[in-house]
Length: 397
Image (cartoon, rainbow, N blue to C red; front, side, top):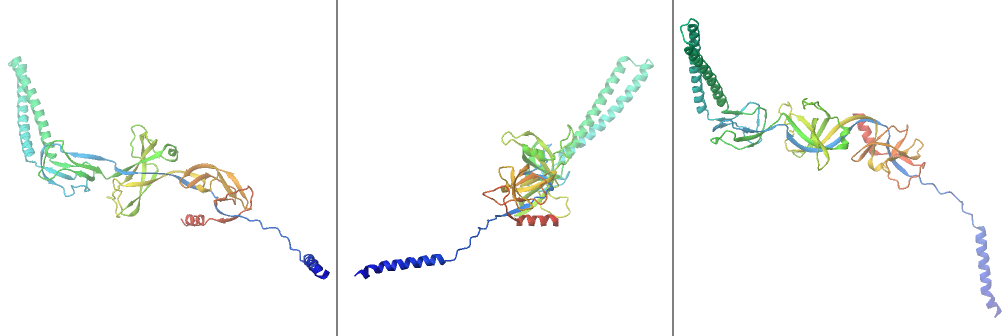
């Protein structure tokens, strides 16, 4: 009976002794320090370079010169040019419309006859006046006869001048039966046709010149400092080109490019947008004088513009997302240690920030987003693939 009671106790003692033996003979695990995680960051080259500051805007192409073609005399239209239609091109002084000219030809004949008659009367009055002066000096002619001869000569002279003016007017009216434009251009609207009778002052068509096209480009006031805008003196011509303007637009489904120049600023600041309008001009927008065919810069086309500003040295382009606290960037030194650097910002250009260099030799700019930054922390730097591709492209060019 006592043996049954002692059995569990003996089993527990033996188990405890076994556990103690296992614990005392177990090998001690080796202790090791955990490896420190070094973050990997992407970097771009911090080498400063020289570049032109660009100002971007957009606008609609308009003609430099636009005019209404008006009838200067009354008449019936008997002929119009084959290109007299919306979109038709014409050269300077090329006939566009002809009016019935017979009435003006007859008026010219009458004016020429009147001039001949007035010339004859003038010559007779002049000889009569000379004769009366001779008689008067000899005491033969009276003072009243001399006065009558003098008056007749004056009237004949006036009639001759009047007939000459009427002749010139008749010649001008006959010339006006053939209607021309003073410049080479294109027809925007036309409102007459053959057989129609028009009066003096009637609008025949609306034209615009094709020698130049102009684009009004709104620019924020603070961006004007980056532009080379000609400032002519009072009375100086406004066609002196300034900064180069690169215009781009989609036309016929394809991207196209044209080059123009700034020529002036408009005189006022827009009261609603608080912007200044600058005017860019493109020569021969329809390529009428170009030897090679190209896409025309059509009136009414909406274009994007890049205006070349002044050249600036020691500029480093930093992606906007790499900036911290508006004016700080992260620098990776030659020893791969990370530091915060306050930089001088030249301007913010869309997705890029232009900062003034130079930085230290061997330093790179960190563009990876880091949640926690400790000055002097160790990083593993790899060059951004985009930066490598852009540098290769710059070296190739």
